[in-house]
Length: 434
Image (tube, rainbow, N blue to C red; front, side, top):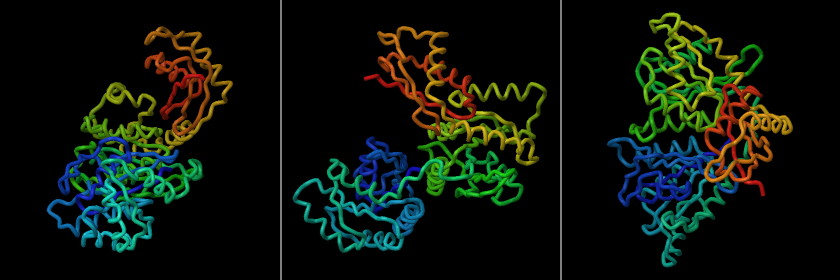
């Protein structure tokens, strides 16, 4: 499981610049004006083969709140969510009262804190870092987010402070998250699954603010269900607590084996549903599309078939997902979710013997030979499954650019037919044979 790294500090010390430098692209809005961060506040990053989630807490703000309230909330989120905290200060301005306040909050966290003295892009400012020893949070590390100075050392320290990487199969339970836009019935579905009211249920959008993990046993199998806060499209999340909920939901998706994407049968599919489902797909998780409130739909013998066809059209990237029509209110088909959850879990972990895999691909090429694309014709020499969750296959070829997307889709379909990968995405990677 990937670790979580949070960037904390007072306004205008360069938190977003450091964030963007670490992930290698300009994701947050960066201007030389205090408190300007308004855009994306989380991203995946990697260093020395380790992956981690990065949080820019500067993007989590309360409207019309004073500094103390703002920074306390940001620091508490970092303390609660992060495995490692980067405390950013401005090396050109020296220690301020605000820096001292943040330091006191972090000292009580018992989390690893890395003190990053930013804007040290000139040797003339290098001696300024020693003043920051007074904060009492460890050795100050000189960096420049704008110029990339010291970022390698910072990343080395992050990896050093990160907890040991957990093995993917180190848990016995099947973990599944319930995600969806607000007010589609996620909490009601959780209660129906558990058979008791353990989560607050309300028709007011955004009632569930945190991700609530509940473990239970059914038919001898251990499960953990996570009822995540209602998710909105990235870039449209302006209310601070919603941003916090998104971070919790993304973390829940990452640590889950199977994702239940809930849509509202009564109100139909909207664009927001597609964005929410995209989080699960991008994470490479097994997915079940759950059509809730089916009891409220006027229907005939063809309604279910028509709705499934529409879902397949709207969610083309989830063509591998199972679809089930339920009513959390009446508990209709809720128990049928468990076989689908187990199927997605097992198929996402399935490993195929190399010789059998290559036999299937040889047959696939014989039935449908490759054609000329980008000035050449693809030749597949050998294939190997390199990982699970999702099942990932590397094809060693003469030139990866000769692989047409439609032929990759064809090979994916053949793998699904041969080995039964229902409910899980597949990744196919082409590499040039040496």
